[in-house]
Image (cartoon, rainbow, N blue to C red; front, side, top):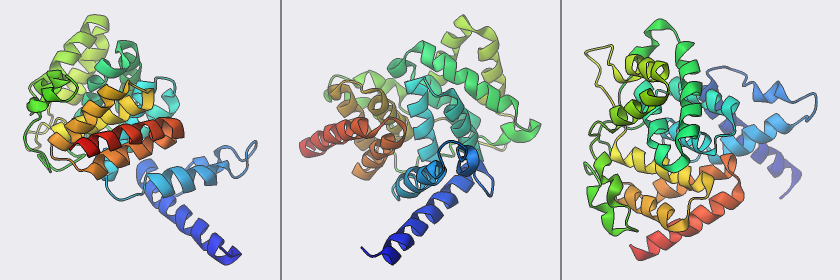
Length: 281
């Protein structure tokens, strides 16, 4: 590849990354470009080009779903509160409802443990509390159109790795409220905040929202890949993606995104597990 081609490729990656990051950060010049110039010049451009140009701008997952995938990964990892705060704000900027975000975090208590979930909810509360008073009206199943590419539920998944217990989530049967009740037992003020700001619907003309089964399965794949959940359990969630009407690309794009937030080894292990699932289908 000659120098001209290499320069053009770099420019294209940067432009893709900037377009995506501008939507997430809702600013013309993303802060990462200047944030490390004093100690690591060029690092910001590397992040923009690779993370947002090469990975997060890929076709296959809509940007709101990608933001929920990132929120899921950072919640599960539990060690990156500033980045989680950035991406919760980003999820809001690209159209995710409060309930979408809270349900994503609550859903991960099974995978990441309650301390990680509580830590993430406190980050989410900080973001919501800083929003304009009327921002709560941005609700609804915004990561995907209501019922988009879903088959209404995935309760019949018990045959894949014995993981059928998640079938109770199909169609959203009050699972969010149940998990919120568990939060209330530990931190009543935190639970009350989300009861008032995420699960109550402030606009009667707006649907109440809630994660559809496909998005729920996708964020499970993200979290399990990020924290290195045992292979059979991750494979069960890849099956859930397909059972809920998702595609191989949905699963693959979710796992590939973990190369940015959990590292290349985690993504490689996740892709190997997904390939085994695809071969058995």
